[in-house]
Length: 303
Image 1 (cartoon, rainbow, N blue to C red):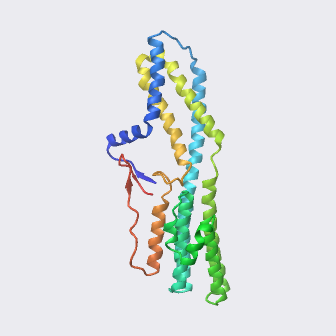
Image 2 (image 1 turned 90 degrees about the vertical axis):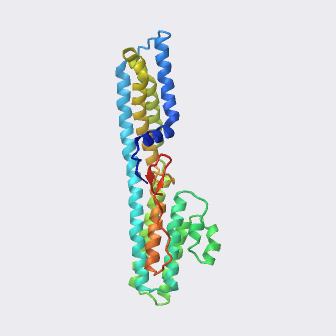
Image 3 (image 1 turned 180 degrees about the vertical axis):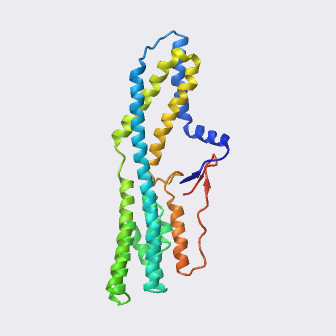
C-alpha cells in the first residue's frame, strides 16, 4: 500500500514518466501527426466538436463508475484484513486463556500463523509456501503439498484440534462453540478475500472505457488544431494523459491482491499479527516488522 509519494517534485515527475512513457509517446505521435498533416499538407479534418464532447462526457461517466467500483474492492480487501487482525488476536487470546500456555495451545497458535501466511500466498498466487510451512509440525508439512486450498485445510485441522480438546475434556461445550465461531469468522474472511480475487471486474466496462478513451484521444487534436496550431501537441497530450491516468488508476486499484506497491499490505499485516501472537505465547525471539519500502522514484509503500 502506497503511503506517500516522494516530496521531491523531480522524482515524482520522473516516476510518472518512467511508468507511463509508452502512453506519453503514443499521445505525442498522434498529436504530432495531426499537427503535421494540418500544417504541412493542409488537411482540414472538419471533425465536429459536439460528438467528441459527448464522447468525453460518456468517458468521464465510465471512468467515475469504474474507479468508484475499483476503490470499493480495494477498501473491502483492506477491511477484510483488518477483521483478520482482530479475529487472530481474539482466537489466540481465547486459546491461551482457556487451554493455557502449553505445547498444545502453541501448536494451535502456530497453525493459525501458517493459515495467515498461507492465505496471503494463495491470494498472491505465489508458489513458495515455505513461510507458511515453517509453523507446522512434520506430519502437516508432509500432507501440505496434497492440499488444493491450503488455507481452508489448515482451518479444517484447527477445527479437528478443537474437537479433540473437547473429547479430552480440556474445554467445555460452550468453549468449543466459542472456538468454532471464531474459526467460522476466519472462514468468512477467507471466503470474502477469495471472492474479490476470483471475481473479474465486468469486462464490458473495461472494453468500452478503453474504446471511448482512445477514440477521444485520437479525435481531440483534430478538433482543436485549427485554433491552437502547434500548441495542440502539449494541450492535447495533457488532456489525454489526465483521462489515461484516471483509467490506469482504476485498473490498478480493482485487483488488491497482486503483490504490487498499491495493493493491500498483507505481508506487513501478517508480520504484525505474528509478532502479537508470539508475544502472547511469551516468546522473546520475535521477527522484525516489515520495513517501509521505496519505489525507484522514492514513493513509500508497505507490502
